[in-house]
Image 1 (tube, one colour):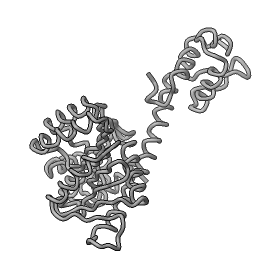
Image 2: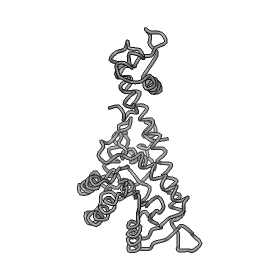
Image 3: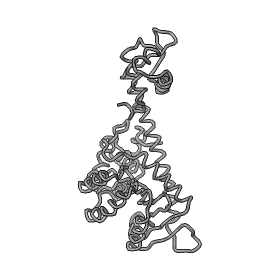
Image 4: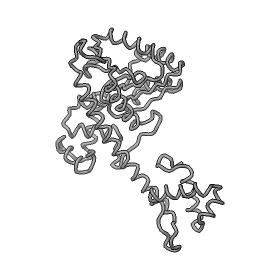
Length: 329
């Protein structure tokens, strides 16, 4: 029950038993829970590390369980700190990915560039992707930063998705949080998950990307016009960096069916990203593109954040967001 807060099943059972029976010692806990001495000791170590145990004032040299009110506050504060640290790691990975993508933005076909293949135009991109996905053996990892998917694209993708999943291919996709507002995209994702696909969402993504069998990656040359061209990367160093980026974003992303998490300031992940973009001076159109929402929705989000900060301008909103601790360091 408390595993989402970092407490394993045995440690939770010991903690509950110590709350219900504060007079129990180690031997009594073993008998009551049917656990070995090693399991009890390990659970006590875990509870001590999480600050859920403290020295007993009545029994010298023994420990007691802190109250649930205090204990749950400690666990939630710890989890919030871990989420903040994870967000910082994601931002660092995005910066690294942006640098990597920029280095290859002006690539031209050349025999002097091993591990790089340039594709020009949508037809070449589609043909190359068809070949790559036909030969996939184990896994496909995808960043889909375009927001809600078009119905015609969904219908075109379903047969290929089904073929891969029926072959036992592991498919992991990260969409933007905003796809939850697109009914046909939600239906498509639910269909995908029902057939074995794994889907998570993030407030923003660094680029569109498909990684196949951890050996080949396809990324667009221009993020604002993905149909212009793309590069196919097969170099070991580049693939290691892109796979690490995917795993970092995947770890911090939210499972599609989960309830949206709020941080200690009551902000959703999408709002955290929006306030950072707002503070950096981005326009509504730029914020809309990063979040995968319409400019009108971006304006609504920005207006709501400014009202919550009691700010009359975007500059003032950025200053007050920093003062309130809303911006990650």
